[in-house]
Amino acid sequence: MIPASLRALLDATDGQRRADWAGREIWLAREPWGELAVSLQGAQVLHYRPAGDPAAGDPAAGDPAAGDPADDPAGHDAPSDMSPGGWLWVTPTPQTLPGAIRGGIPLCWPWFADERTADESPDRSGPMHGPARKADWRLDAVDEHEEGVELHLSPLERLHSQLAPRAVIQANANRLHVELITEHVGETPVKITGALHSYLAVADARACRIEGLAGARYLDKLADFAEREQQGELGIRHGLDRIYHSNAELVLDDGRRRLRVARQGSDSAVVWHPGDELPADTPTEAGRHFLCIESANTRLDPVWLVPGAQHLLGTTLSLTSTP
Ligand SMILES: O=P(O)(O)OC[C@H]1O[C@@H](O)[C@H](O)[C@@H](O)[C@@H]1O
Image (cartoon, rainbow, N blue to C red; front, side):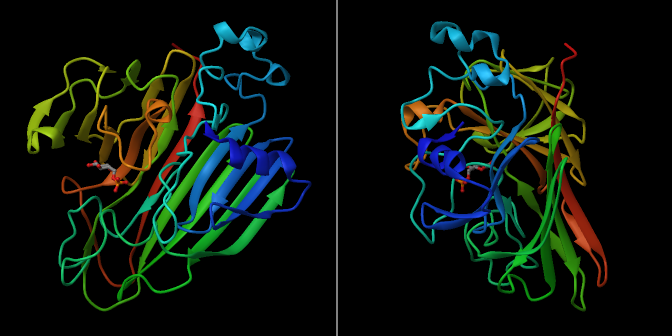
């Protein structure tokens, strides 16, 4: 679910790959395999929709419910400034530059949340979730073929004295895969955290289920990081902010789609929705249509990088039809 203005840009593309949206340069594609939109601010995937996405509310996509708006929670209860379809969510009212866009898959680097250490930020200053998501990135390589696309990006300016990040984004008719690779180009070991802060589009954030976390330990950020154990699968009915100590593959079931969320290089799965306390850049109606499941490295699994070493933090989204 994306802003109608971004949808209009995608619909208007006639093969060109660059457009401006909300003051940012966007790389976009609308091809037989599906659709992809990436903001060069933050190397942030904003939209992904594989061909035939059955929950799009679009008769052409083969959605049997699409003919009857009342039966189609995927699309027709969308706020008027939002367009249904796709696996990711973006706010219709993003902050102006140099603010970050809320939605899609922001890259949080080289620290997660406000847990920056002296390694990541010598004076422990800097924005929540690190500078990468607000920085300008450049496209270093694009590999387009009939089945999909692969993009390689790196920041225009150096974001850390000893670390160099780059992002790889792969999209095709079956999956979206994002990698954030950190290379140590300095002289002394450095500790990092970070996250791929995926905003997944859901029918209603208060009626979702996440499978794969039963029995996992987690830190409850809303209870001063109290440590708890997940009893059974996670049913979401209200706001939550948790860091699960788990590397398990997860399935997000919102009643209309079962999305598999696989993670690489991550022993922390962050599950977040602000409930009724929505951020200022998120209108009430739009705000109930996302749930964040983040592939993360947090205080539970920080990564020590030695000179010459690399770390890959990744996430892969695909469908599962198996209940
Ligand atoms: O508003 P931001 O900076 O994008 O952060 C959103 C949320 O991101 C989550 O990852 C954190 O666990 C939350 O505590 C935080 O509120």
